[in-house]
Image (tube, rainbow, N blue to C red; front, side):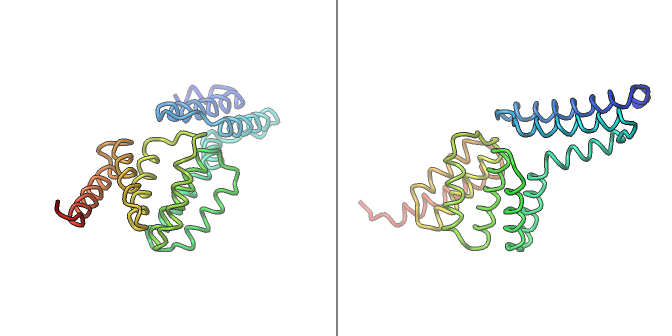
Length: 211
């Protein structure tokens, strides 16, 4: 395979790398039952065209270097969200919120923006601000223009349920936990939602007057 690529003209190798990258990530998006991102395809296409132009001008990029650049540029927002999640897990909430704000100013596509907003809601919840987390997560999950992947949807509804519970919105908390369970059954979010829902229902039963 490597020998075959080496035998190809540099511009054609670049074209193949770019096309395969875009096709692979677009295929994953479709498998997640999401609409392919026009911004992702446009950015990837522009980068591939620029790299092809460099090859034709006699300054080709190494295929691996081009692939790394392509990945870092097109996935910049999601990589920053992953970094913010690490910071949140370590209790560095101010830094996590700063990274999330920076991410949404880098021109994310609608799906990446929603993922960043869910991460912000989780950070707000972990830092002890459930009212802010409630409005952040509710706003994201009510957005109908973009369909979230099932993992993000399950995470969003689970954390929204926690925020509802901590802000005395018991009925909405129950609905959110059930939606998390339905979004991705068997996932860590569904299992957490199931436990939280059982606890919530038990608490409701105990507080109800006997009749």
